[in-house]
Amino acid sequence: MLQKIASSDSQRFAGRVAVVGAILAWTMAILLMAAAGFDFDAAENPVSMLAFSAEAQNLYRLGMWADILGWYIPFLVVGGFLWQRMRQRMGVDADIALVSLVAYALLGMVGAGMLNLTLPGLATLYTGHDAAGVAAAQATWTALQNAAQGIWNIEAPVLMIWGATAAKYLKAERWGYGGLLKFDVALFGIEFLLNLLGRRDFAMSVQMLTLLIHPLWLLLFGLNLLRLQPVSTSLKDAPRGQAI
Image (cartoon, rainbow, N blue to C red; front, side, top):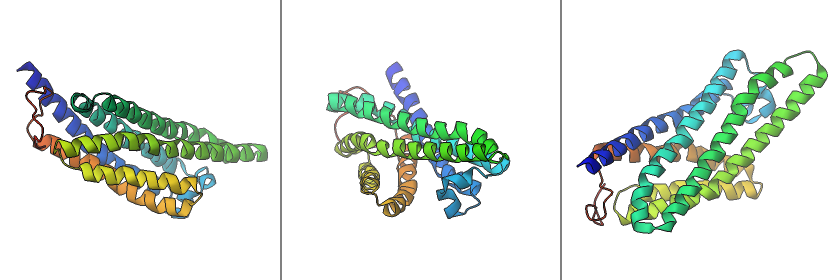
C-alpha cells in the first residue's frame, strides 16, 4: 500500500514539474526575444546585448532562468521517474541513459548560468567611456557566447542517448509519445550535424522547430502522467503493455 502511495506521489510530482517546465521553456524564448525588442538581428548579435537597457538585461536574466527551469531541471525529474521503471526492463541501458540525461542537464545549466551571471557586469563595462574597457567587454562577451553555444551543441549527442533509450521503452510499454520523443531528439541530432558542418543558417531553422517540439513532448507527457492511474514500480504489478 505504501509503495502504491509513493508511486502515485512521484508520478504526480513528475507530471506537474513537466507541465510547468514546458510552459517555462516556451516562456524562455519569449523573454529572450523581448529583451532584444523582438529584433531577430539583435538577438543573434552578441555584442548588441551589451547595450541592453537595465530592463532588457533583467528580461534576459529571467530568460536564462526560464531556460534552466524549463529545459533542464524538468527532464531530470522526468528522467529520474522513468529510470526506476526502465531499469527493471532494460538494465544497464537505463543507467547509461540516465547518466547521459544528467550530462545534458549539467551542460545546459552551465551554459545558461554562465551568460546569466556575466552580462550585467560586462554591460556596465561596455557602456563606460573607457575604450579599452569597451573592447574588453566585447571580446569577453563574444567569447562567452561562443563557449555557451559550444556547450549547448554538446547537449545533442548525450540527449540522443537518453531519448533513444526512453523512446524505445515508452513504445515497448505502450506509454505513449515515444514517437514524438524520437522526433525531438532527431531534431537535436540534425542541428548538431548542421553546426558541425558550419551550416549555421540551416541549424537555426531546425532550432526554431526544436523550441516548439522539445517543450511539447514535456507538456504532453506530463499531462499524461497527471491524467492516468499511477504506474507500479513492481514487475509483477506492471505487466508489459500497460497503457499510460
